[in-house]
Amino acid sequence: MKKLEDYVVSIPDFPEPGIIFRDVTSILQDADGLKMAIDALLEMVDGLDFDVVLGPESRGFIFGVPVAYASHKGFVPVRKKGKLPRETVSAKYDLEYGTAEIEIHKDAIRPGQKVVIIDDLIATGGTIEAITGLVEQLGGEVVKICFVMELAGLCGREKLKKYLVESAITYEGK
Image (cartoon, rainbow, N blue to C red; front, side, top):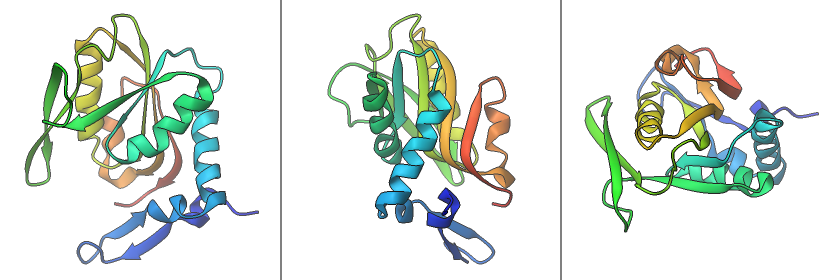
């Protein structure tokens, strides 16, 4: 029987020499791989008390919406600055070269709501760290953060150590 890892295509020396790129699109392209990934995420939230699923664009949408649907919860999108039409709150975070900014609608999280964050990959943890700040700024509580893949060598989990974090696949390297 295949494991979820078997659906991930690893590309050596991309985007630069010494890096192994873990391609999540190979999971998405295979019906069994996609089902296995969504089922793994659903297992991570099974029995958990939460009100809403939140995911960053774009792959957080892909994996978060089916979990929200199957759990009969709403979904909150986190977008790049300037993409949401109503009043927003935003957070800047560091990238390898420069900064980026994300936003959510100001009314997307209500005080006291319990939030599950879902994304495809945790690497350095900067994006999710910024998202947890937005959730808490709006009065929400992050009850769990779930990933399909984790690149443990980039130590992103360190930035999220005060949260419950789970990954379906963990790669020890970068």
